[in-house]
Length: 181
Image (tube, rainbow, N blue to C red):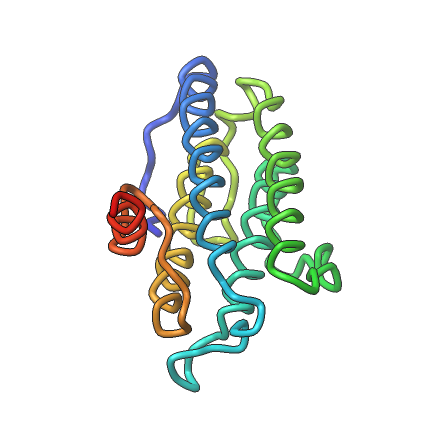
């Protein structure tokens, strides 16, 4: 992340951007839930190499960090030592998807309630960058998509099917073709 000077946003522009990106985040939530739901509970320990996280670790990282990142945007302070969701990891993938859906929806509601002035105010990101608060919504979305991509690459090797992400996958096309037969 660059610490270069960023253009300032008017509160009105920040609010319009928030409204636009919040709709995108809600759509991405549904896509991420499809990927998470594709993980078989009996394959959660899968990892392609010892250097990689397990499927379950990536899934929980996505769920927990997406929610925490939105919470911290709303609170106006980033803290990587924040452990508020530690110990809440659900036992099954279905429970994790439910936890993610409920908590991300709650956090996104808090983002939607930020005032235009709050959205436009500069927020320090651990000394690495200072950007308008609303701009961190893009960083959160990119982080989530990055890890969702990692996780989706695990699915076939663990015996699962890749769901539709930004269009049909070979697995969703196979399902359509066999249904037509």
